[in-house]
Image 1 (tube, rainbow, N blue to C red):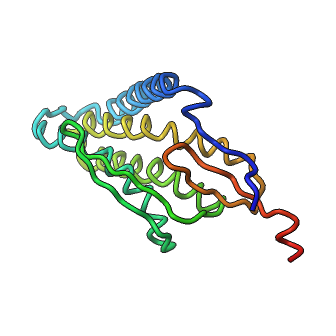
Image 2 (image 1 turned 90 degrees about the horizontal axis):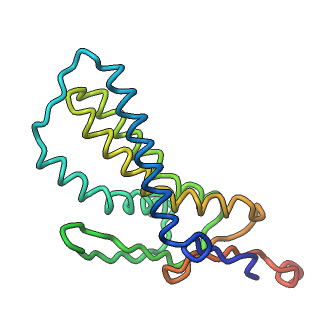
Amino acid sequence: MNCWKSINITRQYGIHRIILISFIIALLSFILFFLSFSLIFQGEAVSSHFFGWFCLAIASIFPLHKLFHALPLLATKKEMKFRWEIIGLIPLITLKIQKPFSKIQSYIVFLTPFVFITFIMILLATIFPNYYHYFSILAALNIGLCIPDLLYVKQIQAAPRSCQIEELNNDGYDILVISENEIAS
């Protein structure tokens, strides 16, 4: 297999720009969610009970986001390595995929946290309307975390259909294509 393209969004966009875009998108998402829920639940009183649980949920959104990346890979039985570490009060998970995966699998892996965590937060906000402000913040935080994933999806979209995506050592991804010599043999 030959490397068609190497993707490293940190090198391409810069870490500060990615953080700024993530922050702006998260802020706009929060405004959208909060205003929508406040219009839908006009008669409901907003409660500040369970603030400790909310702080715990904020700290757990980071490892939860990473675990949702791992779920599709676990379903396809891909070999992975997990590493847990705690930075400050926030537990973080490092995930290393051992073998390349297809373009479709990469879409599923990158978009799973965006779709499922956001859906769960919206569902919880409708079930517990007194706490929609908490769930709006959590959904917006998750969307902000998904910005690098969406940038990777944008880059992978231009790749050939039959490519394989291989993770580098936290430096991005290589898009691999089968060379003509491999097809002939």
